[in-house]
Length: 460
Ligand code: SF4
Picture 1 (cartoon, helix red, strand yellow):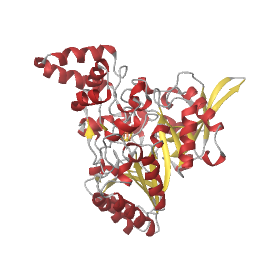
Picture 2 (cartoon, rainbow, N blue to C red):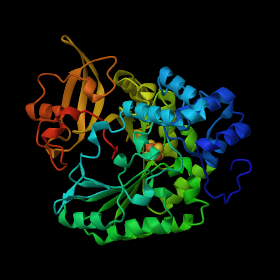
Picture 3 (spheres, helix red, strand yellow):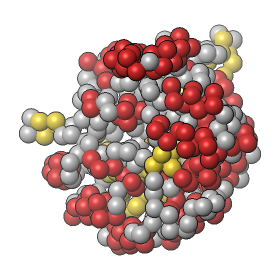
Picture 4 (tube, rainbow, N blue to C red):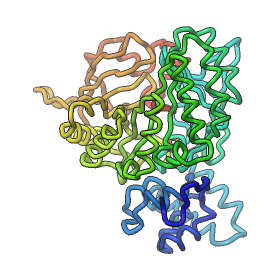
């Protein structure tokens, strides 16, 4: 445990108004503190005692990857924007101007990538169902209203706009009623992903209220919980007052005959280096739940094959399953974090080569884009030039699952939109990539044409 944090510590969040306290306690230099203050006017900032005391190496700040992961940084905003914020925040009389400037900067950071509010939201009886997404035939995403925050915020989060009070971006179901009614009409859905924010910010009683109704739906065979709590607040499964209760709840789900998959988000091996995190994983696994691990590849945080090799080995050693390496999405401080696809393939391949066979469950680099999940399998040289080899790992249209295709190599391309598919791509696949084909089950349709390759809300 961090010095001064007792074993039974209750969760406490720190935000921009605690910056002086954080700086005093951890020796954050004045210029860095002011940068964080300015950038967090635009982008969300939230940490907790465990992140501050256990995960960040304060001797390596600002380069430290955990500091980069959780604290807004210089370079995330354009220098002109940062200067404007500094000027306007110096004089209280400029407060209205400051508010306007913040809104304008946020608007330019693409807070609504790919029309997230429109895509994949299912309807029933003529009405949209809030807090649900149905993109792939067999899986529904469920966003419980009380789980739409996190124990700390990742600076690269593609849901950043949700955390700065953008009501348009909030996906939240008030209760599971709509989900249960929808599932009754959709027996093809076998898998429900409970996601957020982070559903594990909820008390066990609240979580129970969302999970137990699912156990009455015979056609649901797998429940997944998307969470970064093992990394950011492992106490949730070890020392929190209801830590044991949540494990009993997991056991109840499994005793009902369902698979329970904890989709854990680990960005860096340091998150698995603490005794508490390993204890949390051991306790989760002892319930019978299976832990799958995923994270995006992010410049300044984990853009190094050695980091991924160490991370995947640590996951395997903890009995978890390395699952996905994602490509960062086009929103927020994207230019600061993005890694070109060509470099992403190199990093993935170099790390993958070092792994024992049992850790080669991991797949990547994967773009979770509008037509589906697209993996970059590699680069091939041909007499006609170089191509990326790509494959639909998952698809809105089930006929496309597993289908390979090629796109012209580009050293700078960082997302599907940046690629030019081979003209020989089969028509149905090419149409899905362009967004013109009718696609099931989500409501993308022809209106999705502009945004096909754009990043979507959830990597599920
Ligand atoms: S990436 Fe996940 S854990 Fe991190 S801020 Fe976003 S929703 Fe929360």
